[in-house]
Image (tube, one colour):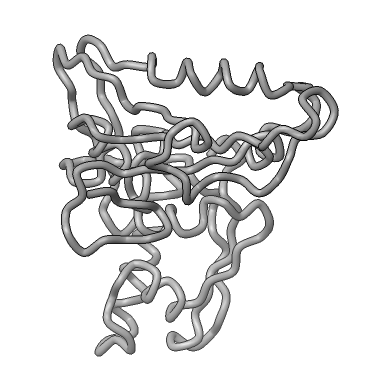
Length: 223
């Protein structure tokens, strides 16, 4: 049984696969590298050689503190197939042809296969919003709601303005609250935690009425 990132299966799959088209890969890394097809094939064929060895900490969404320690575990993270070379993956073959060197040949589609115990765990966590994101480890020591809020806003580079309702719904608090004073107190405390730990700048509070409170701040550039 195979799971796919764009075709979820209700049953537990024995492996997950991620198809990556040659053109998608080039667009992702940018044209400045000037990679041809053979270079790209060599890169992808080297991916299965990546292993974990020894004692390491990895981001893991089900672990307490969001990290899990792996001790003396050696395994390949993934395997690789090329769609047009294996009938099992015919459905992922490209309809595009190469230009320039190798013109006229079918563009390759690389199939990354996750089937080892660590590979399966890596894939599940990579698909999980709280999972495999290499961030400052201090984030995972914060209160869960502070983590939730930061994960939701950390990509924003411009000024962030959030009111009580938006923050409450982001971190999963019941809305509307029974007590607005208590809710605003909790939000102030959460924002203070993020500020004091260096994740955001000092928030500016707006709104005279307790029901109309809002906060303005930036995510620190290093995060």
